[in-house]
Structure formats: structure tokens, C-alpha cells
Amino acid sequence: AQSVTQLDSQVPVFEEAPVELRCNYSSSVSVYLFWYVQYPNQGLQLLLKYLSGSTLVKGINGFEAEFNKSQTSFHLRKPSVHISDTAEYFCAVTTSGYSTLTFGKGTMLLVSP
Amino acid sequence: DADVTQTPRNRITKTGKRIMLECSQTKGHDRMYWYRQDPGLGLRLIYYSFDVKDINKGEISDGYSVSRQAQAKFSLSLESAIPNQTALYFCATRDGFSTDTQYFGPGTRLTVL
Image 1 (spheres, rainbow over the protein chains, first blue to last red):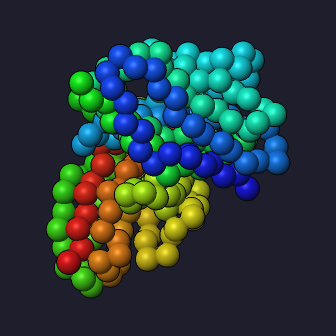
Image 2 (cartoon, one colour; image 1 turned 90 degrees about the vertical axis):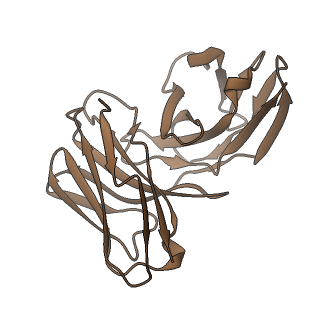
């Protein structure tokens, strides 16, 4: 079975500063990795995903993530955040065959002026 | 119109009552999922269905049941609600043949008194 650990429950940051949200996974087989974002009072939407190929993945709204197999990590980064990036971010993992997703506990990104 | 809809959006009920949460989708996806979200715990899978005749238990199915009435409809029932089931519930869909992305509804906030 696979699992996901999001190391920070909250990340406060000032507007225009860079940010990194950390995600580590555990799996005995090859994985597919996802980041979803949940804006206040909304459902989740896909930010980006890694299935195969290039380990640097670019997503919507200027976010990117890098798959690191040796460190079993898939950290999310943005070079300059905006107030509108305030949301909860979830890392998720599945394996090939993809029956279900396993989500991390989420990281709340709080961007202040 | 939204592709994945959930009704009701908010519900307050009393302990012991039976309640049904409904999910409908216009995306034509074969796979549907029910999750619950609790603060600090992320999303946990309750049930999932790969087609009308294929229903599977997720991580936390105790106290819940589901019905896949049609490809487009997937309902979640709480036979006898308890306060511990107070949470935000999300339905999601996925096309098992062509995409790896799950699409989420807006959520139902359930309060059990």
C-alpha cells in the first residue's frame, strides 16, 4: 500500500516570496503523483501531475513540482506567490493500475501582504 | 453548469437519522468516488465504483452505504447518523479509459447534532 506525508500543516508566507510545500511518499512500486488545490469553500482541482518522463512538472498558476525517486519526494514550488494562492494543497499518490488515490493531510498556504 | 454536482450543499441532522447525499455528473465518466474531509486529516476514501455493478469499500466505509443508480449518479447514505460523521463530503469522478485526473464536486457540509 502507498502513503503520503505532507510535512507542514501550515505554511505562512508573504506575497511575492517563494514557497515550497513538501510531500514525501511511500510505495514499493512505481507511482503516479498529483498535487490538488482547494480554494476556500470549493472542491479540489488538479494543479499538476507526474506520470512519467521529465521529473520537473509544470502546472497551472505558475506552480511546478519535481519528482525525486531517490528521496521519494514530490515537492511543490512557486517562485513568487500571490494573495490568491491562499488555499489548502493536497499531495496524492497512486500506482499504475490506478484504482484509487491516497491523499496527504494537506498543507494550508497562507499568503499575507 | 457544473460537471459534478452534489446535493444538498449543506445539511444539519440529528443523531440516529438516515440521510442521503447525492452526486450527479455530466462528464460521462465511469468511475465515481466518495470522500470525507476532516480538518487535519485530509481526504479519506469511503466508497468507490468503477461502473454500475462494481462497488468497492474504501478506507473508512463503516457506517456508510452507497448506491450507483446509473452511470451518472452515485449516492452515499448514512443509515443512522452519529456526531462523528460530521464532515465535508466530496464526490469525484474519473474516466478510467482516458485520463488520470479526478474531478471533484463542490462538497456537502454535513453536521450531525
